[in-house]
Length: 317
Image (spheres, rainbow, N blue to C red):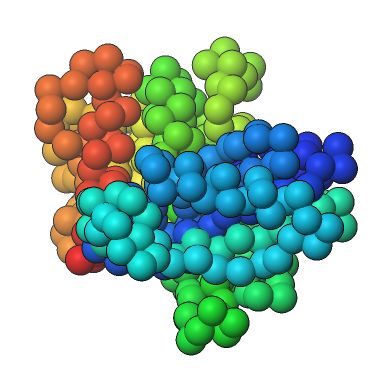
């Protein structure tokens, strides 16, 4: 969000800007797909495409090009193997290709569309090509799609917005700590509670949404999706059980419950007697979080984050 807000401010101030984007990386390149940097003629920079002498050289090139009346849009390949053709000056091995897009006040509406998307938890696609800097509501299946046929024939599409949503059921102290950590991890965070005027919920400044609801209606608020993660941590056993019984029949990427082993053992026995299958219960992460002997809300949040990241990335090679 901050990156696009910085770009918006510069364009509103009628500054000419180069947007640098890593559109391909191979090997041990320091810049990864999607890394971005803003550069203005007066030397303002924000973001990074990998750092080091390579980045310094690209920044200087962009500043020089911004002196021109019509700066070009192009891609530049960087090979990190020392002093060779297309070499970046770095010796870390690997390669990366960086797209240079010249932007000015004519592009403000596109940047505003991106910012609005992020502010409202929506999703879309950034399109880059030799002739295009655009943003649409198209949803990509993957984070990136790109193809480089030549210096003049290439495209790069990037998913913009929150790929994953974490639903926290329970707005207490642990919910606050979990919210803070998962916002930093790039999740869209929604917190629910059934208590009016709950101090910890009202003072939660990081969650993207905070809702006071009837837990009987929880299904209406949680999207059944492979990008949905649910952490149940209400203030009492009966509410934990109620929420779990409502959600357990649906498919989410992650469903977990906070609580002691004794409490959860009792809950499992009751749910089995009520007709919930053992197969369904086996898919619930309970007690939620990796076992690291966490005690404080912040430590519990770390254990939950570690487990959810493990689940999120389990299919990655």
